[in-house]
Length: 282
Image (tube, rainbow, N blue to C red; front, top):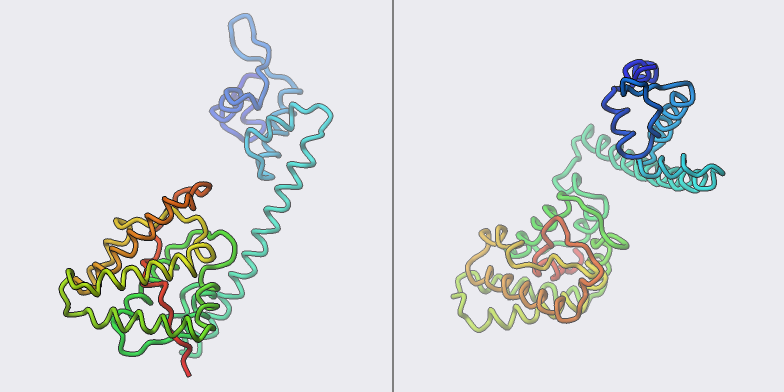
């Protein structure tokens, strides 16, 4: 068979066959005197096997290793890994469908609220907290929703679970309320006001002590430029608090090597205002 005939037989393109040859997945066949490849039954079987392995989820490199392993020692291990990954995806899909069913039910009864479209973890957290009349708290809440909607994976449990745990501690919740009050008091202040640096120090210290290791372990995303686009909603002095706090957190991360083993995050971290939590609604 010529390459076109082989490709047609297995339902692939000639380009795919050539790519498999180039990647070392499909052995090169013998060539005719004129230089054209000559394929036989064994080549067709090899190509069919490659296609099947790829359809099962193996990468071309894994398929190549599995085919090269005459005793078939690697294939069971590879297939077991794929099965485990599919099981994980299946669990995630079940959770997502359950969440969708909940949202559909609320939408049908007119009970769907603005916080219901965020992740279940953040929605549960937002239901526990409130700070009525606080502009800083409203900004913080919006930033949390934005970060959540941008997705991305977290190391360990959801950071919102850590926030919820802080809220459950009345002393820490009181500190959060104090942070918001102090930010609100800076609404008409000058960025050079000494209260700015003092509050930035307090926010950074709180974040390092209570959030950095649990909610965002080893994060390398504490960059002033990452939060800068979101500071326009704040008054100049309030924005300067966030700016200085993020800078202090970044310096701490660099000094302690907390981001040594972490890949850079693809989305901005929440600003340090998100470290200040509200007391549970009574």
